[in-house]
Length: 254
Length: 254
DNA sequence: TGATGCGGGTCGACAATGTCGACCGGGGTG
DNA sequence: CACCCCGGTCGACATTGTCGACCCGCATCA
Image (cartoon, rainbow over all chains, first blue to last red):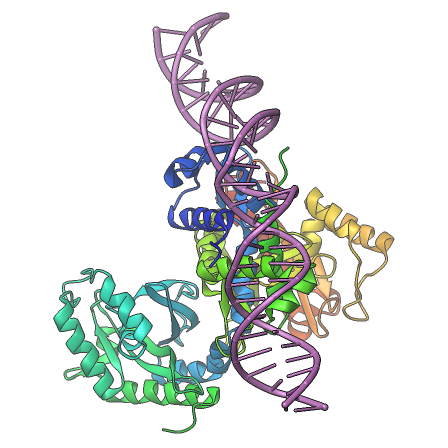
């Protein structure tokens, strides 16, 4: 296998670096962070800028991500078949459950949110499409970890960081959670990622019965749970939605 | 100036090609479209795939954009200062006007939507963040063309495509529209982009009084207009919002 | 007001690097 | 069954990206 293209790898590393660092970064920052010569870094940055992937603040000379990325990211969503099929079903899910609905897929070591329907009330909410969520603490992530072998190996290699006091952090315990998830076909997150927030999710399959994503709802624990855990009505709604999307993708009936 | 990096330019061209073509593209399609050797194209695609910018359908072998682009595009929004400042003001604008509010910036030959607040009713709407709109026919685009010299030169070089029967397509007439826009400080679009849809927009300035974007509302012509054109209440609301965002960016009072 | 250091940007030589086109192997089609 | 199309590989070649020293403007500080 003829090696991957070095300059591209470096460009990608620069973009990720810029995406990570909250603030804009200067040329020297970038160069030293990646161990590259300034000249090299400059060449890559200039090309990226020319292509619109990076923008430079004219006064400070510092760099940040560029608008073209937003446009391309949007195009990604346009072609995304799973998302397209799920649009109407998640809409119904949010309506019937009264909570925010999410559609997530595995991406690297996390869940990438590819669709998000706001909770149907007039509160101010921020769109989370494009955001990442952890695999080990969210309902979406647990579902993917339980049903998708790739997700499972990703989560097995990473740390189970304690995001709240209720996060499951020991690998053995987490495996049991995944067992339970596989057994009942859905996963819950009871204040394991954010205090006061609970979520439920179920897997979505494609025509070959392979897991390709997860749908779920997330909301305040007081609304989503009763004394026995997640409200049965919500679990049923989420699972129905997941089945509907799967059927829409050609997975047939269960 | 030492030339830009060839492989990066080519990679960017491939990404744009994939973003443009609705469908997934095969290796040979990409190679022939860009006039590259298959081997070269394959190397670039493989690297892009490895970095998550491109995904390959395992059965057909065809390529499409990758999830990393969505994540990076989202990060772009996180750092975007104009958008951050505009969040609450556009929210108020949508509330008070009862229409969908938009925030757009110049990108290449169009307006890139960086924020979009849904019309405050329960209708099903699709988020347009990341989408592009034409410069010559939308209110946002006219505002940018009128106040931003770069936008003006972009629109002057391009075609004024007729999107509806009411689109202004002759350059002289369009210049008059821009004159009017500069004179009164806002622009309108009366069914010039989509039939039955009208919009109003006003410019946003940064601390150096340079135009950096535009805010506006868009809605059904029956609601947005009265017999004399755009409703005066809407124009006032949009201009107030634009001033508020500008002030927030440090442009001071007018 | 001059010296100093830092940061972004440029230059030119060098060879590592990406590119090219011929060549596989497989899956669908006539 | 033969053909063709398509994704993918290989190795030689020279183009291309890389490196590190250098330049310049700005802000800081004496």
